[in-house]
Length: 309
Ligand code: 13P
Ligand code: SF4
Image (cartoon, rainbow, N blue to C red; front, top):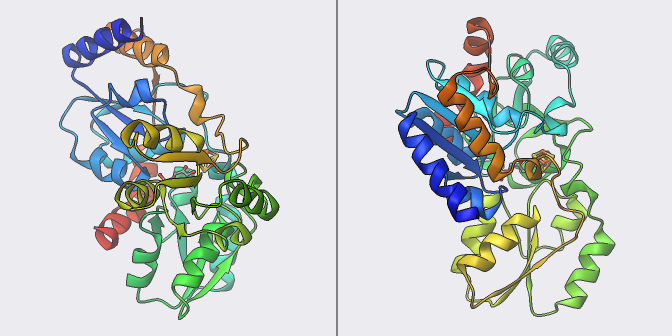
């Protein structure tokens, strides 16, 4: 059944010149039919290179918006219209404008998990994989890092010469894990290495053997000589790693690290979106942005690709 739908999807995307981009938090059967997979930095770089007329994004809204900004001449669709990222909606541009006015020499670094409107008041974007590299490469010392204070404090530790102002935002999924839960997971699997995403609380990150982005965690686990790992990011990563490294054992840090938004997209959503793109019946969820918004919001993404490349 899954294979049948996958075959139909492959035929439809070919026929209608659609490139499928899927974030690593998507289900295995979606990654199997995608043209590009990876974390948010890699997918941004991939979106800029796509040659197809259409892009179908399997992930959350800000990721499809980023793809649209990088390829404005293409039609960009999000496979499930309800898939948003709560962190991306946490701060209003006006609030950041006020801080900029009060401290004009403080440059604003935005995690890519932000709306396009918020990006228009920021100087550079970062992803979890590129944040330390980009912040280190910036000549400025005084920075405001939004919205994720956990990722921001991870960057501050890695770049002690910078003066980084943080606000109270972050990923409700990763930040839900407590220090006590992390200690309990380590006690339950004493031989396993703990690998966590920097969106986790600093007290959890402090217990980890490795802190890094989705792609960083994946690379670390694959290349490590260790045989057991506790994965402190969205549970799909433990599942994908288990497929790729059957000789190793992967445990989830907590059952709470399930992103309900990333989990919304199903293989049927992909199939239905492609069928609708073929008919051009307006049912597929297309990303529409004004040229003005694209040109203003894109500046900090271009800066991210320049400094992070
Ligand atoms: P990555 O930057 O590691 O892809 O993470 C994106 C995200 O939404 C993490 O929760
Ligand atoms: Fe947003 Fe967190 Fe889900 Fe990532 S895991 S998409 S940051 S809510």
